[in-house]
Image (cartoon, rainbow, N blue to C red; front, side, top):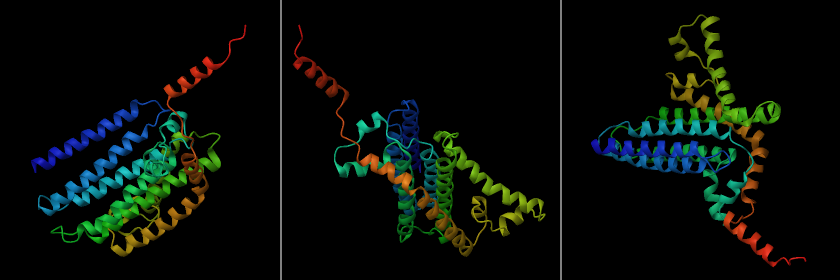
Length: 290
């Protein structure tokens, strides 16, 4: 148990260090790279620790906590991603790897909206796929199916709200609304989806808080999914969230595809020192007029 706590403290320190480096870097730099790379490593290490803790009987909820922590990290990553710029800066272009395979591997970790959205989807996608396999034969008390589907549904809702905010900003608000506030717009939409139906039930139907949490089936409300729900109810929300996510992905597809194409077509640039040397050589070769 002591080793587990010490390992978690080391992972937490790594996260805070990566985030501090991200905030200290200038906006024009590839700020997201150290944070996303470190968080991916912490996610993998934490998953291994959770599996070991459950397998050895230290705790029987470590994998569930790991999955929910991944959900939170992915949701925050989506809110940050839609708030990032959708064009590569000069310093980011200089950091793009040369080879096509290296570019494909590096793309989810680079700064940019499309990169961040893909990073969050990969993190949560691998978690959702791996969780049932990690459950088989390793744990004394397997994760309930409701929990796994609940986590996936919550991520689909987060994805839908984030990309809906990005589409609204790109389609209607680009002249008045800066991209860096898109994450705030997504949080506002999610809050409206939670509280407006909730207040409607409380004020119009005169329901109690417990009745709303147990019986209300408002699609789009994250609070509804967090309440006590059967697997059938969660699956209905999962279907609705999946359709919504596919729709907003289709609406944002040209915007995302443009960013992906710009990344893979970015010219290979030499370093600043090499550029200065080339300029110096051109000046030396140029004949001096008398």
